[in-house]
Image (cartoon, rainbow, N blue to C red; front, side):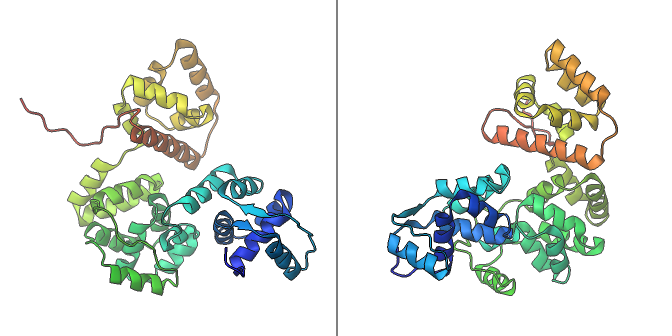
Length: 332
């Protein structure tokens, strides 16, 4: 620990000195970016000698009279955050600050409200926007893309589909333009097929935006639209999961989300779910569906997206297999 604490380290020390309850009140009044910065400082703080604790508390006019040491750690930080934030949000923050590369500019953009980011990007060149959307998470990119003017969004999509690997110098310039911190690691792994990237983004669009943008893309490039459709994995594609995999998925998702998702499913997919349940469980599920009144399409879409995401997680763990929409080549 350096002889004199920096600003973020002082704030982290004070938060730890205040204790869980008081710190939770402060966290509840901070912006997400501030929470992330403070959490990172707390997790990396380590041991703070009592003399420095006392100096910090005097500086903040808080005569706490600490006589021992404070130990900032991931566990302490996580416990404090859980008192003021939802568990899934805390898990996301902790995952990011535990990461070996730390926080990057693209992580930061991922926490900007989609309307604010779209409003900013609509005044940029389509090529610039295509780089930004290719670097942030697909669900956030989908929300931003849906808010862009239609003609402009289509220009962005076309550039993403034709995008070449971006040079480090160009990324450095973009980071400066966005007035953000430099990335610690700009090198990317093997470049993915841009159609795969777009398929993930389209998977996160709502039905209206997906249909609108795909229809417009089809007019510009039918081949690209067809490739994206083939790569997309939707709730209806769960019909391609075998019985054992579907049963595992059913056990992994909340019952209320399953009922909501099946409300908007085809009869064929509903029957498939029913067949992979016990007779009693199938009857209960049918009764719940029958008792479910009108629901918002957005809620159905969100439930289906959550179950698809769960299926992909199970597939990544090797527990189930998800077939894509392409026919496999056969040898006779």
